[in-house]
Length: 383
Ligand SMILES: Cc1cc2nc3c(=O)[nH]c(=O)nc-3n(C[C@H](O)[C@H](O)[C@H](O)COP(=O)(O)OP(=O)(O)OC[C@H]3O[C@@H](n4cnc5c(N)ncnc54)[C@H](O)[C@@H]3O)c2cc1C
Image (tube, rainbow, N blue to C red; front, top):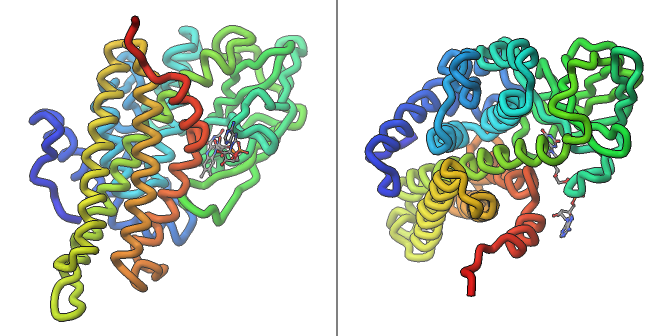
């Protein structure tokens, strides 16, 4: 992997931070991404390495053992991890969504029980919202929570849950008294069955699974936030974090496409010259480089607006995710193109980048949902 001399849209401090995260990726993640993709799983070692580096506690307050990064710093971390492996970045995304939810909506007892374990990597969190019949429209959730003495009883199925094959705790959303509530369910709870989903198109190593709840009894203390507060605010707040993380992860993925394509185009010779000298290939490289820069700037803007608590921050995050994910997919398609047949070879990075990039256009709000949401959220001047 080529090292960057510095990204001009970032400050000196941000460049230093990104370089530090990239060093972690270059040693612990990037060399193994292809192997993990082919195996369809991540070894626990990489989770341990992420934890040791403080990355799993990125959104956990320091008093609970976390590293509590600023939002832009968290974004740079996602870019660096996404540069190396989108499956690992996906785990970081959902785990951070759970950390954020417990830190923000949990009571003192819940924070004390789960946050130190999540920050240290002893436990990894997964986010259980989608169901077989509830994707973009989460109001179609049919999983239910029924109060029973000192317990709730969960029944229903969650589908496509990232890292559920190995995660230790699940943030689960279920209907309760006509509204939706959020619950933290620990893996060994009787009545919960985890059914692996293997061979996904992209982020293949992120170990998806289906969660089946059949008379699953969880203690009353598992309710996160107030009853009926599940979708708004808990899920929507977590999804804002997830969208922001995927936006930055897409910048990293597009950057990986650029570096892979540049390296290859300068080496590969056809018609007596490196293909990088052919103007139509230069056009692909130019579009890729411009996309990476523009997407990073949108992500930076989103991070800064969210940190300032600005009302237009929500639209900025949606725009960043929309632009970065669609741009990453174009960049990945062009990466395959630049590599020709080598781009289609199962042992090479381009086909993995292409498959992973497609997923970015679906998760945390599909491109179509982004398009309709952004149209509604476009900030406009008064008068
Ligand atoms: C690799 C992977 C990992 C995932 N991880 C998780 C996870 O950890 N936790 C979790 O809860 N879920 C997870 N998901 C599920 C993901 O959140 C959903 O796939 C996503 O919300 C879209 O829902 P859907 O797939 O059911 O598509 P649908 O909502 O059924 O949409 C199908 C198509 O219709 C379009 N569409 C739908 N509604 C509209 C509309 N109003 N206007 C225009 N077009 C529309 C969509 O854009 C899409 O193209 C994961 C999915 C994948 C692929």
